[in-house]
Length: 433
Image 1 (tube, one colour):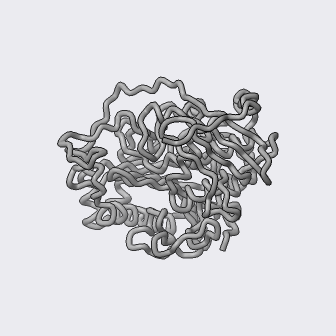
Image 2: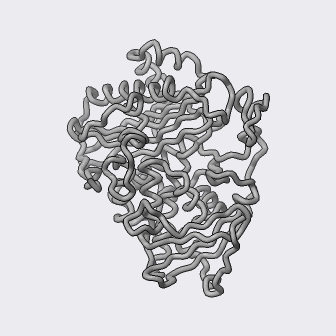
Image 3: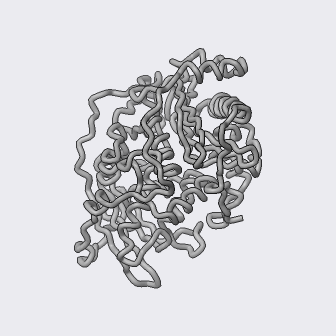
């Protein structure tokens, strides 16, 4: 049981400027009216895949009930002013077919954390200011050091780096605690994502513990700049639709339970929402104002950099390339077989893997061949039907699925005609190494 933190009385004076946030205009990088949704043509994507699919991929496509795959391919065409226009093509897209979003939920939390840091700038803090996490409730843990950072101290910036570089779980937990369960969900619902449900950290905790989030302090040179009190969420999630998956599962005591695993109260984010959340940050002017995160130009460049940086290019944090190879968090095209990523290709993405589900939400750019497109996909690879046993078909089926499907779309993008060649300089970045 963690020791309880005696919270300074001065911190209670703070009231978050929620109203100011909601009324503030979103910053965008291009003058462009939000685009009306284009009509999807599911037959197009399936036909494209079938024309080039290997027997391996065809076998997956033939068994949608087993593999529960969903895919969104987004074609991007620029006009004479380099304004991007988007056309989605989906395969089995269904917001009611549950998949465990795993680490993909870290992506919106990273964006929300930067929003909140901008609101707190008046206290003299920013994303690089050391953030100390304290404990004030059952199950909570404190953080005062981060050996992976340049100064040995934790910060919002370093947590976000680790989330995108290697999908660090503790970094997600700390952003969850900084934001609070209620703020996370209400803000995403207000942005037009009513089906999102983010209810838990990635550490064993019950529902009550996940409703309670830690007090945090921002300090610099030993001086307290801002203190945030602990928070308790008071939300009514809709758990009426039961979600059961698999034939059996291992419980918390490693005992085999011969019933499906219950995901009713787990995190939930539909694939379309994940795709639109990523698009709203990469191309904010292409979505309605309510769906734009309030990010400064510096925040955008920071996100672009670490969404696309490879572990070998990171100085702080530093990663062992034997474990965190460059395609470690890049499922599309490259993770299967640990294929090297050409220097002229960059992938801005967030993957997730858990309980046999693999998901990746990506914007892929080829600077040499002037190619850009988005891919979002999920597949379930658990041939024995037992969940929570850490025995899944990731290497044999999941990563090869992402590799082949991504390659088919990439080859198609390389050869398809474009009226205007895209100017992709906005996404050319300088990396740590």
